Length: 519
Ligand code: NOJ
Image (cartoon, rainbow, N blue to C red):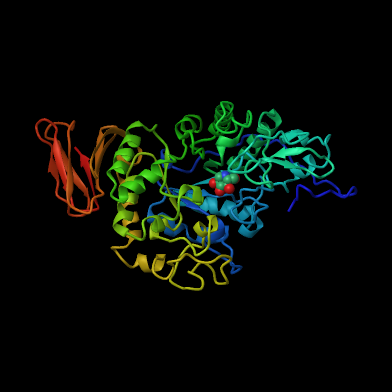
């Protein structure tokens, strides 16, 4: 670890820096048009599946599980950082932007994963950390070594601490006691120095890195922490106006390639980032969905408002790998599977692109450790209390708190399981074009019932969700006169017909979902 106070012995050779240019070389996309409207699985490779018994998840392990993901109905994977990292954990302190984390395997393993995913119609997007590198990245090791080092200007420096800054409760200016001296800016951690993205050379290099992965065939990126790209002062360090052109520039580079997807993480301004990136996570919606699932009408109302006003193409979720976005869904809902199902249906059948956090589909609980690591435990493949079926060795991290009762093996055998429910929701999404890509035509909420009508071309679909623990219903109007509504879910549900003035009333059992196609 590079201590900001570490002097560099005078005879230490500085590491070589690779900023070679990468030309665009698109070989096309093997995926069908519109693939990005299908549901994604967010995968933390370190915790997904270990293929070689060292207790750490790897790319070959993930490749072994592609049939499971395909069978579930997933159409895309978001891989959290797969490059070598300094943190040796979630991977956001990147030490090499054009290589694979040795714990995860090799570039050849990555290419094999891409090939096998594509063969199953699954796209793969990778996390890209544009805001900062690791302190151990050769660029920063050079930059901190001398005030006149040629790479110095790739990061943000001040001769002394400017004072007055506070980001997430800490001072982002860090003292460099290496011979280069000065203070560098690092918003998240002193081991994650921020790049100076006002430097064209830095931006060009990021675009070269993007092309490196695009040329290998990746289907896009999740851009990390885009709200932090540019700072204008101690009161102006987030979501600055210069950010949007930077993102639009990256999007243009990505658009040189066929059918690539970009989803940005910018919790404060998701609509703006959707406009710049093509897609961004709908932070805020996830808490409202869970509020609705708990039976609070204010949550249902807020979800309806979001679906009415959100731009097309946002990424939706219930939770992810960061505790600022909430605990594991199982813990947030105290294991109530009735609530869990209606929460899941809301985003899996809703507008936007759903991102399922690995293990959510089986109700995986957090592990018995604090903070973010508790959200990032090994996947529960089996009930084995020692390994959870994750590894033949010793898992690198404690298992999920409910591995013996909530795991893939037991749920695959149970048609009433949460896994079976997720599979049914994704089959609907994949089978009805208006459910995956339809524009919102109408949203109704009535106390604890939500109804959404979406349309793609001539085909319309109606989704109705009852969050109440009692029977409830809603009236919808604006449908074509006497339109038949064919029931698509649940199995055996009765068809309905709109009245002559285009109205229909839908009543549903407690905590249930109905889906119709409107003829
Ligand atoms: C947001 C990521 O989701 C989080 O996990 C990471 O630590 C920070 N960005 C910094 O990269």
